[in-house]
Length: 188
Image (cartoon, rainbow, N blue to C red; front, side):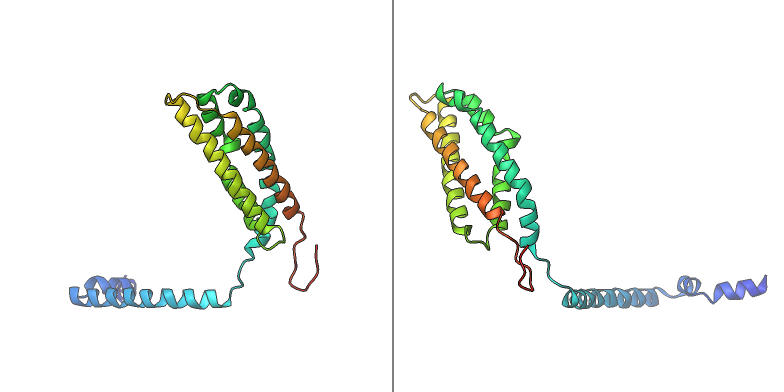
């Protein structure tokens, strides 16, 4: 029993409980200081040896899915034609907030990022900006009409939005099919 007691009393955790409060504070401050100084140093070392990720490859891969989603958005927008022709303001507002149309910005931005290094990058950005302007005008008109403003016509804004989304999808499809450039000069 005495041998076990000596071994136990010589362990660091047992000695720490027998230390004075000043020794405990200095030990914990020192350990905290080491951990604070050591963590950023390790982060700098770890990041200096890592290779950067090529985000455009990820966006190129995700572009296929986003393109399918944009094409689904065209079909959903086509379903709103009757409501736009009849100036059904609340139906248009509700239709623009369905999942297929409410996620259009996110998916369009994935397509834009995937094609930003291609020859269609500028056209893609311009067509997206025109489409967003038209879809926002349609939503704004539907909001005005639902609040009671008289004479608000939706069909013109609707037709522009459909046409511009189709143009965006066409340009996006061309930019998605552009081959990915590999570092050694090969194309896939």
